[in-house]
Length: 276
Image 1 (cartoon, rainbow, N blue to C red):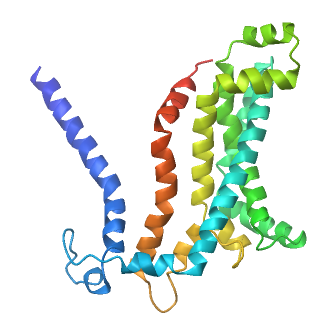
Image 2: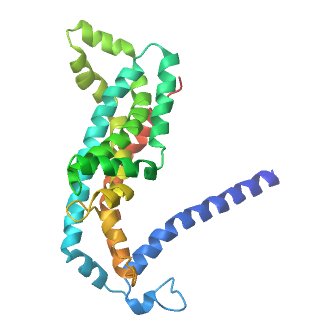
Image 3: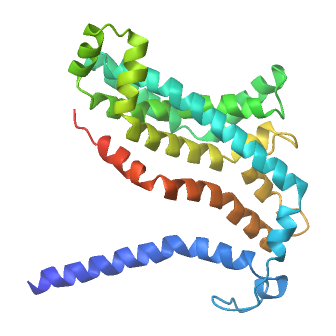
């Protein structure tokens, strides 16, 4: 009994430490964004208090490059997510309803392996391809690349959700005269809307946080927020206050969306826990 109690206390201590450790970078970023250069470059770091100011946020918001980068991030994320999730859902339906398990399973494994490839492996060929087709520094180049790279992830997630829908429901719809397209759009996708929402959020976060591809495939016209944040690091100095403020502004949109749909996100993750 005593050993069990000590074990629970130890587990609480470990989980609390992990929780605090995961939140500390965010806390320090927010704190840095609200401080001036004197407090930021103090010899002894101040973890609490100090002189707070919104000057860093005013400087970032007044910058035209920030507004342009924000618009590019929203456009690229929305379009790439829609394409990836829509195409991934159709491909996942085909895989989920495929009768042969021996041919389907290796294909699913290869899909997630492709998504796990380091981005730097694809950087050079993608750059050469984008330049040759004349889409360098064009937001549509990022949309196409993001959608293609995240497509395996969408398929891998949606397969589990669609497998949870009994095939008898499809047969009933087909008996009532529904064609294949109507079965997918009017029957399958509404039944897995929680899983569809979860997949959409995960893919959107991957697109929103992508740094390497926009760094290589864009200059000024297609620059996204992660690249803009990295621009505060120059060969002469690092504007920690401005970079922290820009990072906080970059975090806010995706954090708000996640908070709004957190119930659907949890429901979608639970729906996907289907054992074959």
